[in-house]
Image (cartoon, rainbow, N blue to C red; front, side, top):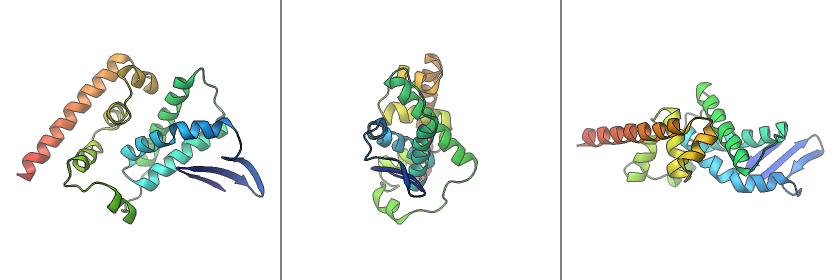
Length: 181
């Protein structure tokens, strides 16, 4: 049995608990430090709360299974971001994204008429590489240098993805406004 909600983490095989959040391991610290950020990143890709939670659970399951060694905290964060993006990409590519709307999502998300809801909806229409760069920079507050290291791309590629992503987002939002009039 494996369970990972936003505030708990528990893995059990048969009657033996392998790892739980109650254990004073480094996992609890890593989970507390990154779970919310990874969830928001996954949500920006999947546009579905349950799929985002599943993606984050899969990332931490892989973290436990592989026990990667990191040179510093930034290396660890970059690994977690990259694995999250890859997992979301896999979910989308394999068509495993849920095609229904949860009743919880209907009340928690901004309405489509609101500016924030329109931007988030439009953000989901961007190609994955631009959506990731925009989400990391504007939603999570990472610098261009940090984004380039996390995604394993050059600094100029990171800047270009942000620039092109902003331009595409602007064009999509402008097109929506002209269609609404």
